[in-house]
Image 1 (cartoon, rainbow, N blue to C red):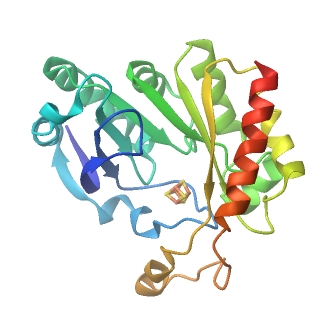
Image 2: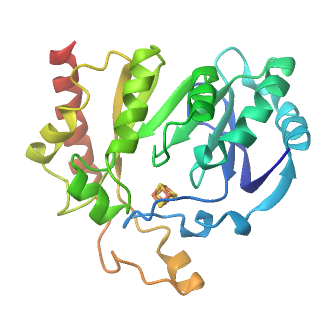
Length: 241
Ligand code: SF4
């Protein structure tokens, strides 16, 4: 089977546990206002790749993975190509390579999506906004999709890292974060709630692609604000445990 790959990063230290390589799949059903990768939105912008060839490429980095590492499938939205991911599962297993999925959860929870999530060593799931109105306004999809995925991950006890991008004047207050935390209160699968600071490093891509940037002129999040808010959610997560 073939899939569409946007890019490949040989050693990504951040997207999942241990030393990893990252495969960014092309195509995304969402249109987040703060997206810094608009170049990944369209499947046809990716390179058509055979599952076997991609696994061979990933396997070259196997000596570096160690006990915790592996490959992280990111995007775009990797679960938009769930059939392709499923086709790689036995090939990766044959090689003894574990995979993580870095998803925004903007796809329906199909049987194939469930299978792919079940086989992952870890799932990184975005919780972009705390309510349906925010989701629809700022991402183009409803909150029902990521919440259904989170419910499923909790039901199967899958190690999950939930992430939220903090954008100045949009969700950069403790009060705003309390409404996100409501969704995590009864989710024992969540081992970490991580905040990411909005940045402007992808702005040039909008210009290059000739796409209007909804947040043009917005400043990056002050790292000190991110640190303070992360300490706040860490404390709240501890209280919930
Ligand atoms: S889900 Fe990710 S890739 Fe898709 S629009 Fe949002 S930020 Fe961009």
